[in-house]
Image 1 (cartoon, rainbow, N blue to C red):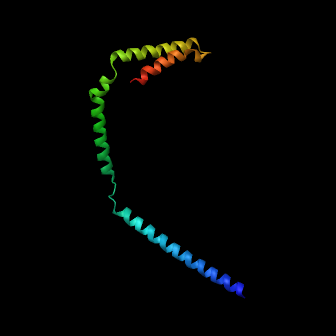
Image 2 (image 1 turned 90 degrees about the vertical axis):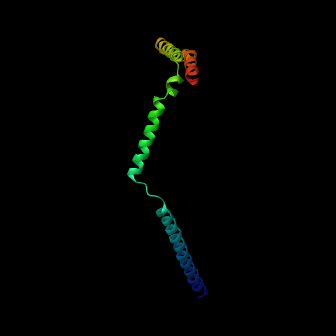
Image 3 (image 1 turned 120 degrees about the horizontal axis):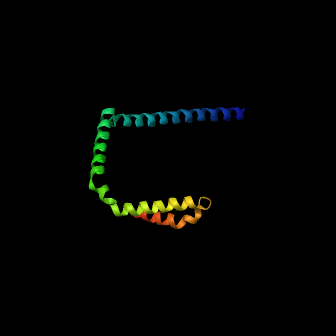
Length: 114
């Protein structure tokens, strides 16, 4: 009999703990949902305005001299020459591409310096 009594008490205690846990979970979820509801709503018009603003900034940056001055004509010629050397080497050594490591390294160094 004492064994059945202990089992009933344990079951009773487990049920109480489950109820308490469920209640605390409900409370925490409710509070989090209430906090989320208080945050400003994101609307499509706000997103479109932000996208338009970012688009304008990108256009300004692209049209600025920053990108135009960044790569000089001389550097462009050097890079194009090094690229041509790599392509020519790879074509002539199609079965041994590792023979072109010097040309590739020269090209990489020029591009890395941009």
